[in-house]
View 1 (cartoon, helix red, strand yellow):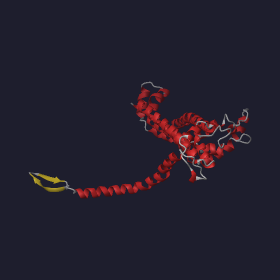
View 2: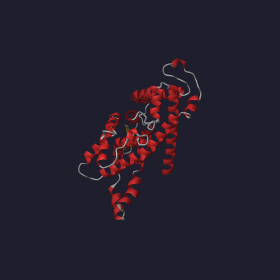
View 3: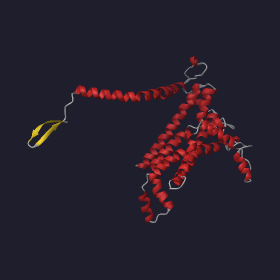
View 4: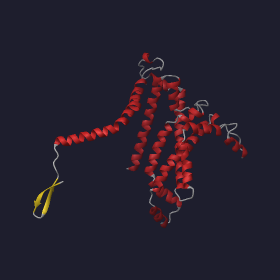
Length: 314
């Protein structure tokens, strides 16, 4: 802004005019700077996500075998038709849905419970926060190996404790009936610490005077939890639900390390089956068709979930 003169007793100012060419030049420089920062991330996204996704869609309609990539041919929908006749794929799909249905309430419930415990001012709160969060920063492979020793049917600590209390030793990972539930428990234990911190941040953002007013109105602790805490935690809960749902569908490491999909394919998940089909059996075309179908299912689940949440908000 520059001074251009006096009008009566007042000083008159005006903004300097910018030429159109100068303005375009400044905007062009800003765009260059922005794309310079975005460039590496966009390049990685293109190389490791977009191009592989496009290639996977193409391979899903071919009989691509990893050792003979040059003689692949287009097979149309044959891979997808064979999928619905494949008992291992159908079993892996059922196992994945079973894992999702069980792990989400268990993991989110545990995270919310821990957050409520730590939300009150107590001694050693910091220690417990670190203790509950520490499994999250550990490698899933390390955690899986650790639980393999703990759950050993013959020499594991857990069976020794059960036997001490008069309970017979359990097969855990070696039983088709118990293996998936054991993996559900281990996964919930490993992941609950992350959601606990997010819930804790949400709880600490709730104003204390809201609870004080409710207490003056005669609400007990349970009523304050139901009518104040849960509604005000809804945005946090939706975020946690979505991230946990996506993570649950991607289950791979725990069954790969702990059971190799067994016993009797009782812990075979879709992602693990994609890995086995594509890299162990080298049937890239068939594995791509599984990935495409499974991605479509997850996309539909996400759309339904978003629609339900939006309707509730409206």
